[in-house]
Image 1 (cartoon, one colour):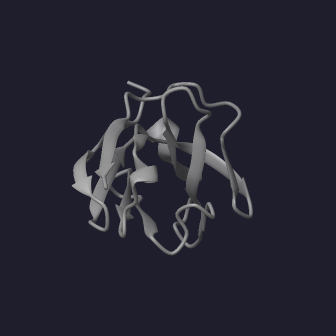
Image 2 (image 1 turned 90 degrees about the vertical axis):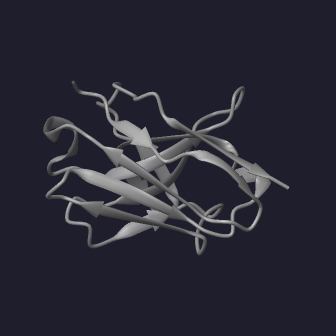
Length: 125
């Protein structure tokens, strides 16, 4: 298996919180920055967080900064995304993947193509 596995999605009301988790195989995870991405049907995928391999630093997109917090557990090859103060515009399918970032511009690693199924988050107004 080379694909990450995302979980934790669901239906929440605006203002509520939700925590997503992602486990990834060693070849995908070890020594790589890991990020969260989301996609709405018909729109381009959006990079929302990117955490360094050590976990020391995380960059966030402007759309989620100050509301979402990403962490990584290198022992368990897991990253999670704590989402607070959710908005209807956070509705999307969420994925994790190796990442790169220039400030708040977050992209998937250019050599990564094994996307998982993602986990769906729906925020009602």
